[in-house]
Length: 326
Image (cartoon, rainbow, N blue to C red; front, side):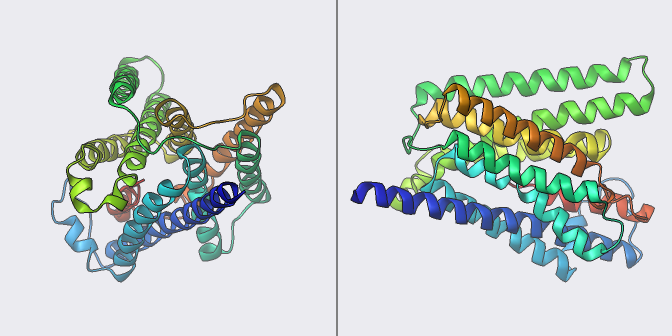
């Protein structure tokens, strides 16, 4: 009885911390976008790669608030993964897109279509249905090395194959806009899978926090986290640069939790319900989420198509990338 109550408390903490982390990362994305626009309004124009861009953005109060929110979101995610399974935490973090949409709807007030509100409600309902049907539970705090190696190699193979396919789109005979959309979509999927692996590494890291700094830095996870996190951010930058955000965003939002759920089961032995009714509900929930994400990804509020000045394109994109630190 006591064990069940403790498990329930840990799950509740994981859910609350995940929601808080999702809210913080959404705040980071919106604030850094506002900071980038303020920088552009001051007369700055992106001319190629600017190594001082981060310092220019740091002078904008909104961007600094976004950066602080990004750090808070990471800390909350680590804490959530200490208390709950990866298959529970990562799908909740996908709600970041809903929080971003809500923020932008309040800031813009006009131009929000009814189908976009329906898409937001559908995405929320889909995640709820999936989590209720799957009921993620259990799992071990650490994954054995014998499982990490194949997981890492499979992830690398998927990402490498996606990059190769995306590069081939340049030589296709289809119109350039279609090729660009395909490249962005493929790289978005690869980025989502990469973020799922990064989340699994964070889960491993979180299990050592209670043993003190010595245990953390003597473990491999913080160093792999730095490398894989940086590599995935670079991959995300290429996905965003390859084509429209509406093409890459579904891959970011759907493949991240999907990959994390699979890795949670394989690496950490987390349990999901697999009955016929449960699996049907889980697939239905994921399908509803996919439709909601696809619709929101085409919203002018998300893509920033509402009269954005040309000068802001470069800084805004970099600022949005800075908020992608799951």
